[in-house]
Amino acid sequence: MKAAVITGPGQVELRQEPYPIPGEDQLLVDVAACGVCTFERRLFSGDKPWYPVAPGHEVAGVVAAAGAGVNGLPGSPQAGDRVTLDLMTRCMTCGPCRRGRTALCRYRQGRTLSDGTFSMGGLTESIAIDAKSAYPVGEAAMAHAAMGEPIACCVHSLRRGGFAPGDRVAIIGGGFMGRLHMALTRIGGAASTGIIDPSTERRTDAARAGADWVAAPEDAVRVGGRQDVVFVAAMGGVDIAVELADAGGTVVLYSSFDPELEIRIGAHRVHRDEVSIVGVYNQEPEDWKETSTILRSGLITTDLDRLITSRYPLSRIGDALSLVVSEPTYRVFVEPDRG
Ligand SMILES: [Zn+2]
Ligand SMILES: [Zn+2]
Image (cartoon, rainbow, N blue to C red; front, top):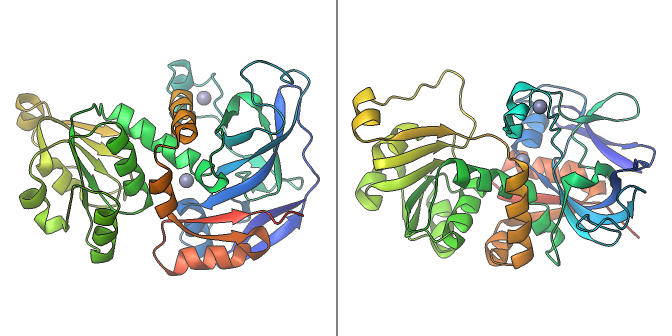
């Protein structure tokens, strides 16, 4: 079978790899769709010069076979089931894992190809994975199921941010992650959800997709007013988020940030107004469980459809990566060429 490997800036190749053989407690999953995320974009653009690497961590597929230990096990996905995959190693041995904070697992993440090349595991044709890391998605479209990982990250973000029905929500950043936050807060019963983005196009798009209000960063406070939860799903805008937070509000730092960036907030405001700053990273099994339920429910199908920018067969992986590097996209999907 084939696996994509990024070998340098603007360079990707398909390597021939042996078909994986599932272990006793594993499933063999035929990959149907894999999303191209920021990680892949940064590798291909040369922003993250870390080569060679086999990318892809937003994966969905169909179970082709179940190992003897999980074959017929009630509750475990079985042959023919559509699944979304959690590719994180959760060692249950390191400090954070022992506290149940497996999103922060310190154990080595990832896998390896047959020659030892580091692999995220997803941009390939088939994958052997622990059955406990595969979550059923019912009849969900495979591109939607491939958004399982980013959705789980956002579910984690809402949970850690203490989001509750009736909350006023602002999201800084109208890109893919911001829009997933919007879809989830809407079905979660937000009183209102606003999107803040410097791009007119992204604001128009968000308004069309159901945002209660949209604003450019400089107008955010005037247009949106005080908020209960502010998600920062862009690489900047933290100061605006802090300003937007009402008494009792929470600012959730979802995006990745420049390591030098500091947050300015007065100790008095944290004390007297109980404003919280919460960081979020990755996801945990309970987030996946909720994600699998959301995908099965079909509640955000329309939202997810709007976020599919394009799809490419695995044989055109170079074109998929070039598109993501050259222009703003929501999500681009790669699908193994079968049949
Ligand atoms: Zn991702
Ligand atoms: Zn761990």
